Length: 479
View: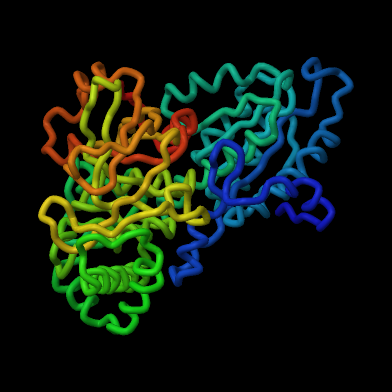
């Protein structure tokens, strides 16, 4: 069964839930802006819902399980409406027994994920039987539903892709359902790799990426990129430059008008290649002078909720895809530096999104500057928000997510040194982070791979722990 919602139920359960995000910074429909701009729409994800437990000693002998299910129904129906990219199926109410769980398992065929709403006390074995069906699984367990929750950490340590929301708040159902989308979206994703990949060896291996996440890498050579660039109507490039860059910039400093038009033409070329190959991300080791800098093109892609990642950095590209699907926030790939005098890290790069709050959010003020390393082409200097909490992260080796919570405390000014977009972010312990940079995981890697991290608005560390559990990835907190 699906979860339809009549108008009265929708108004009563979602009137205060508008906007792009659910509680905890979880994204609603993160690819909406890209779909509106012409990218193919991905199919809705099917999440099967099962209610487990009819009653008994816990919660109480007179527990009315059907009435409890009826209480959840309007919330889930409203959630389906708000997310916009999921279909909640199933809805069976079963006793907390192995036999009842076994009857459900064949019904999970075709589902992308499983939501178990734990209602009443059991041994944990029926929940495990459902988890062992192999789908990414979330369990919602209210206080006094029983003690089945205590087995979940054991299952997680055994590598099972299950997360637990032990909470009285129904908004925690929203959070875990939204996270359940990510493994399936990664399986549906394709990444254009222009000029070859860079990063950890595992992330650069198309077969390993496909085996781990289901994500396909599509190689694009320089001739294909140049041909796509030449195929763009020059008038369309002028219109794109005027609308998205020239009229919106707070200042244009060094680049010429033609530099900005060329950058817009490259965006349109990459857009056409991505649509042709049904891709949601692009990364490039040819992002400089081929035929122009890709800084503005990648910025626009990130503003739309897609991924444009510089320097062919596959580890960062995968990180940005995951965070985009989970949190609806674009990533800012940075070259970090330390300032221990302020217990801080300085993040700097010439490609930053102007919509760091997400595709439905406002654009930050920005200037159009040259790429600082060689003073060429067009890049962006984005005024990031002082006081903003951020998450700094990067998936490495396809098996470990490096993550830390930080807070922007200033926009530095060191005589116009370094990359164009910069921010100083306070960390828990700058000296310890510096001394253990890479956490012993990246010590044998090249400079870019050891250096790069990705900054996202919001503190997502707790949600990242759940997300990585669903993806079969370890978490290491840096610093």
